[in-house]
Image (tube, rainbow, N blue to C red; front, top):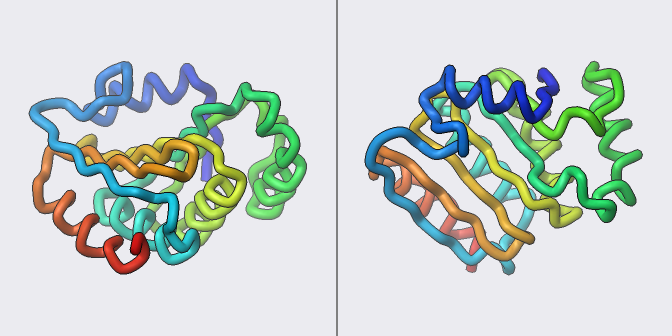
Length: 160
């Protein structure tokens, strides 16, 4: 796992086929799922597993500067320390996970979901991304229709 600043995220976007705004290049389709009744752990596992098939995963916490996030920040800081990421995380709103770091990515996502942090996840191949807004909605965006179909199929059991 590697922590990234906002500026490093923008560089990562450009080098992995996303626009500076983090949008997939080319024609993309989206899928919106009601996430308000999702079982956090199984849903998070499915999201990470879906994105991991596309390469490494960038997890970017969007409301990092929001004061409410700092209520839970010490727990998140200890989690990051325990997996070897040291330093002042307040300067690093994003984390980059390699496919073999699935469990670390999963743990970070579960913490973010538990505390209702708004976040986005991006696959390193530039064709798939996921946005979670206030734990109410999950938006999947991809240039590959089969990715969206697979995401919907995999998550349908956990969103009812």
